[in-house]
Image (cartoon, rainbow, N blue to C red; front, side):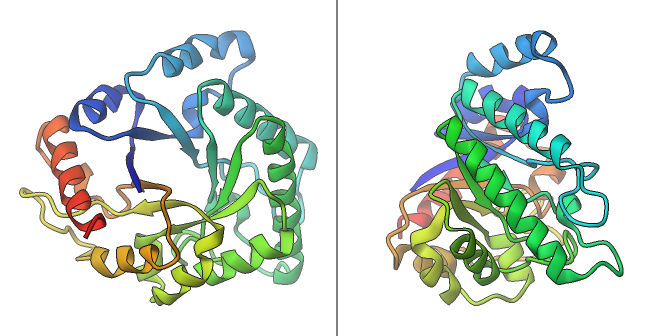
Length: 265
């Protein structure tokens, strides 16, 4: 398993110095709000980054919804194509499709219709990703982030329903534990898992933070059962890294060493 970190472009050098093998950035760093010529300098900076940028997250902004009564399919597909093309151009191979705001079901809107809309959007994302040799990883999000598709087993059902080779599944320890989902679901989903998110482990000046401890040991043991060997991205959903006053390199190094000591157990 390879360990990376979700971070910002200004911290890529610190992450590289701390020993992470890759970075995961937000899709907004691809400057999808700008036309090609205007975005070119930012994209060139990402290509020249000191750490390989292998994945992107936050695929769709909340304003570009894929469920509900007013979906603009042309705008959604145009955005998907722009993001995926630019992600591939800077060396990435995977884009995470979480985007809880974009897929949230509006109050009073039929859930079954919203699910069908999301299946359509995920299939189109996979078809577009195929043009650029990318993988789309669907991400379950706990209920505070989205009002449906909250569990790994639900994600596995979606991936199987869509059945596209460019569409896989992500599991996030933070969301999984917040939903009370059993680790056994990781074992069943194993062959379809393409990516993993991990919360930030304790740092000496913060501890575990308000979210409390996470069972990294049980999580890694479950991942090893189906032979998962893919990426692990640390994502600061629990806010530990954000609250730490340690220098970035030191904090990143402590995070990496803590996780590596348990992932290889």
